[in-house]
Length: 305
Image (cartoon, rainbow, N blue to C red; front, side, top):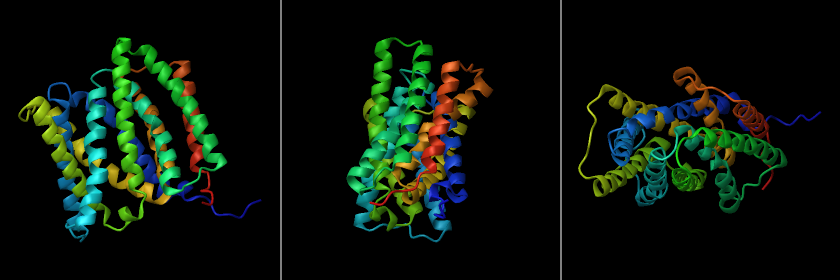
């Protein structure tokens, strides 16, 4: 019997924020659909991250962190902030205009793959056998969920291809930002300050792009829309990304990306409660495999480099 300590990813200090992030992001898909009903997607993204950036400035000030970054810090914030908070979310919001939010959530679970590959290539992080096994089991589950969602999506095949293609571009953008968060440069600056600058720069790019493609700012004067912006900006961005990027710095991009694998299951559970979603045997089996893969992966010890 081994006396080796459990891996960090199996400890409550990691599991609690991991599941908080997963639950929050699993609920955002329903909210995003409402955000693009009237307001152009790019403006909704810009409002979301402008609020998130201001929130993180307040958090940094309350924690006593400096609100200033040197030139290297500003450059680094731009390098991960624009792919994460501008490119990624513009792709994802537009994808939901072509296919169901459930299908987008399922496809986004593939974030695990580029995160693991980029971590191996650029950070030298090897994948142990248990992590690979858990990944394979989980991806079989994701494939079953994808098949289930593709069957129930009423969109034409061309629309599905566009939606999936946009989601894949969002995944690639997010993965670049994820791997950058595991570097020594990311750990050299206070996370709230770094996030604040990254989100505000992302919001500025979002606003510029929105103005170019959709014209002047548009707002839907409806309470539900403003509550959605507040939830996405504060809970799903300021809080969730603070927790998620800290997870990446501790357990690495590959394991942290398992939140995206579990998110479709959370999204479907919430849809069951609020939208009358009905589970099929295929979907239930896929969800079960995702959970089994998640347990295997999070209990895997990080191999030596």
